[in-house]
Length: 147
Ligand code: ZN
Image 1 (cartoon, helix red, strand yellow):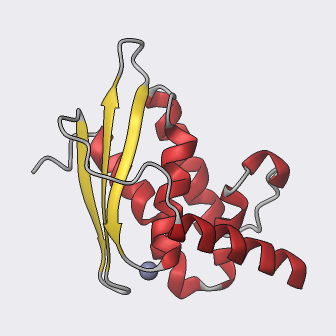
Image 2: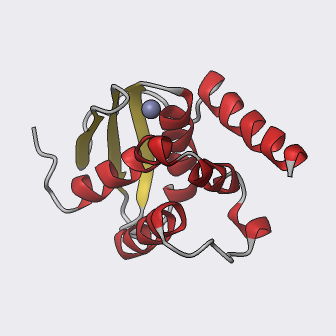
């Protein structure tokens, strides 16, 4: 289990250091800001909808702890190129993986870097850091993040 923890940390630190898809997206079709007062994380997510009705690109800009930034980075990778309903389903799935009562029995291999976020379950105080970007994107898709 310690090896696994180390692997989780490595994935999170590497996304924090070299985030994917970081930067303001202007113009964009969707935008919302998420704020986690418990930790001070502030993440803005952006997305455009392409001609095939798929989210592309998905970007974020944020300041916060390594977990919140890594989670946002992983999210942009996972949700680029999916349709809106697929994105909503994926967001539900990830939030459930992170906050569900049951220990997740998901196919860990299939989760890719998401697996590192599941490691955060053991630190309940940090779960809001890990779900922040996902909640923000859901708000953006539902038009609740207009500024
Ligand atoms: Zn945080």
